Length: 364
Image (tube, rainbow, N blue to C red; front, side):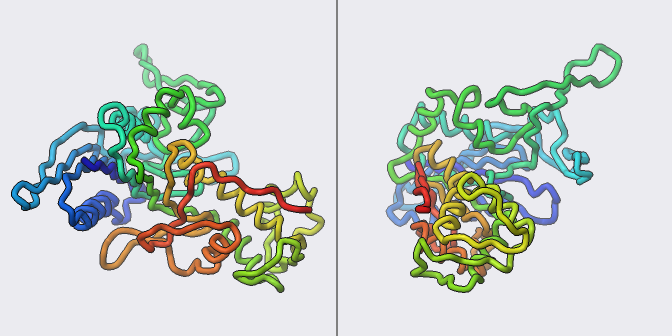
């Protein structure tokens, strides 16, 4: 039986986006594509509603039958589930309230995958995450990777109490519900045995799909500046071609310098960048290799379909799923023609990250 895990995150601004509806539309779409009428199983993980439901699709006598079974319940997520805090820079952020232990977590998703690996190995065709996203991963509820969190502890009668904890280098913050590629495929989150079970779940043609955005504005603008440099073209630029990026901002310069300083030293100007094309290729490749799509592919051992860094997703009309905005054709051309990236087979504009992406060192 083919299995699919469809995870619906939370729009924490509560502005009308219903990711569970999009997940349901994906289930219906995959069922429609099942022309061979093979039995299908969908594990629907609704973070906002706090429900995990198994939907089995069968075809007795050639007629489609769907059976829904409640598997697990968690605390639902509402506006009241959130709080705000101000960081050291004076910026205000919204986050899930600390101590929301019974809200569904990415760890529950990982456990569901491992359960398939243990009991029905080789059957997981698609693991999909519907929700907001960033280059670092999928955002289920919008929590923070605070390395010295204040954790609630049982009160002794004097009112709410917390204790500040300094986490180890690979420990997850217990308040954190979102993906963290720095920790999620190593102990203590998942040791070697757990990772083996995780990988065993996937079918030979299995994959993960992160449907959200991957849009650091500075990355997008840095690529835009490269694409508008004299001598750049969507194909045919030689590695030794020297490009001058005059359309950069100071933030663009700082961003690219951070990736290239070890190879080129500090950039001499904060208003322009002049360098060989080979270094730009290496920098943008390395940034993508450090993104969720690439790291999750390596961790899971299977390809990941995700927005290429510098692009964002939007909602379909009329099929009501998601796709990458079509205005990023120049970025996509660079990724395809110079980095050899491929796009998802459904034509939705997502990149396909294979396990073990490497970026050849630039030739000086």
